[in-house]
Length: 325
Ligand code: F6P
Image 1 (cartoon, rainbow, N blue to C red):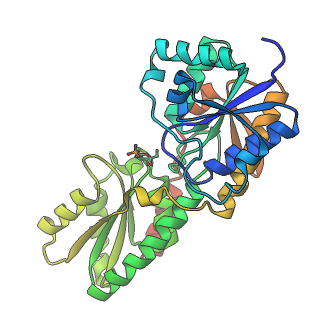
Image 2: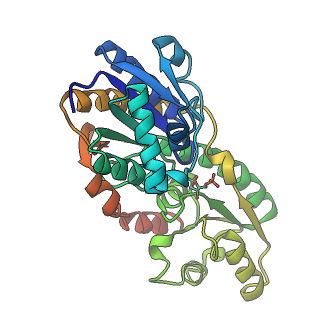
């Protein structure tokens, strides 16, 4: 492949606050460094269908403050097939796109990696997901904003929990990961967190009730990671049966966690990562995710960030336990 002149950018998977800041950064840094930038709409579906538009600096004006993604997003089933990826490659050829920047979570970066390998195509990933479950970066774009959103909601629910002396099970997103639940529990001064990383080791409800939390407290907040079988409703139901003396309520925060204007931290992270993506292309890197570790931009091969599980710091469980007495 010759010199890269035109870079396509797309967002894929669940939207995350800060994706727009990343689109802006890739576009502006790309133009600053003399590349042409093309915005691809609706994720990989849009790449397959040729939904592509030339981007100038004006296309990304005023978007750093906005949640969601101006490029729209999708979870593309077609891109999971070799035929779908072939069509996407044909769009790149027709549009003169010779490198891609993909902003998304694990599934999106897996698709990006397959595409890069199959067509020997330069692809750079940016970790855009509220779940923070990508290996190789301390934080993903959207995680900080979502933690702040959850914290605000839980602070409000705490008023009712206190006033009525209730146990609240509050369910948060995270897919299979407990980063949001555990850290938000600490940030909110919650009494417990129930996270998938502990699911097989202990009965987290029994452990928490066994600590006799109600001896010193009249109300409590338990943050629960979403789970098809063992979410907040499951635990609330168990308390109703196993500890009928308690007044229990459930709040499932749902998609309100993903929306809203990005925090300063997410805007800065996304901006630095966007500039990092263009730098990676200039250096001739491919099939890497831009990460941020110990205050520095790093490049993590897709092979590593997709295949390796991000370590869940179990010391955070102790922090919460000690502080919730
Ligand atoms: O990956 C981000 C995420 O918000 C997860 O936390 C959640 O499980 C999932 O996406 C929800 O996806 P959807 O918006 O497609 O229902």
